Structures are given as structure tokens and as C-alpha cells.
Image (cartoon, rainbow, N blue to C red):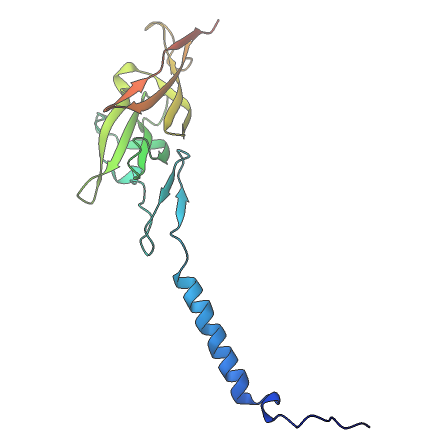
Length: 192
């Protein structure tokens, strides 16, 4: 065996203190990396991204079940048949759009479509009515996407048409423009 011509270096031998110092340094690097990450972004149903500040929670959409609706059900309760959330007005806070009807038990009661925002109090509040139940229509194919509310409205051409079998179909969409929801042109189709 050949011996080295270099002197024996004491600092090249690893000891437990060396491993402890390395582990402490690595833990400090990982902790600093966690603190220096950018804020999170949350995708909403409207397709817009709502960025939150680091350390803050994303704003929750209003709870459709906690709202009070301008709907006269004659003593019966109302039912939230469908709901979707999205930032409809571009302010970074999500709104909820709810399809609501009376719980009639039988038949097809008319639906209302309402836009909710989180009020300063605990309960969400209705800020717009897109479809008034007085129109006596049912709502299907409901969605919120890219700030646009879309639905198919099923209705009746006269009082002689049985309430089970709507004979009119209308595609509708609404979008926030300026300071109000603007409805798209009506697309009315009558079934044979």
C-alpha cells in the first residue's frame, strides 16, 4: 500500500456535528423558500382568476341556501334547484347565481334566476333578478362561464297548454355591462 505524500487533514473526516450543521442549514433554506413564494391564484367558475394576497384566504361565493328570495310560495318553502358562482362584474369577488322555485311537490312550478352578493351582514342578498317567476317559465341548461350567465327557458304559448308540457323554448344569456345585467337577443323556438 502506498501512503499519501500529503498530510492527514483532520477536517475531511465527517462527524455528527457536521451532519447536524448541514441539516440545520437545509431546514433554513426550505423555510425561507416557503416564505418567499408568490400569492396563490384561484380559478372561478367565470374563468377569471382572482388573486389573493399572501396569507389571505380567497373570498368565498355567497351561499345560495342562506339567502332570502323575493318569491311568493303561498306558505310552501322554496328550493334552490341549481346554482353557480363566478365573478360576474369583474371586481375580484365571486357572485352566486341561483335558480329558485317553490317546492310544489307535483307539477312544474315556475323558476326565478337571482344574482347574489355577499352583503355586509352575515346573509347573502339578492342584487338582481334575471328571470322573474311571474313569467311562468322553467329554467334548464343553466351555467355561468367567463362572466356570462346562460340558460334555456321553457314556457307556454297560452293558458290552454298543459303545464306539464312547455311548447316554447328560449335560449337566454346575461352579462354585466356598465352597471346592469344586459340580456342577449331572444332566440324563440316553438315545438310542434
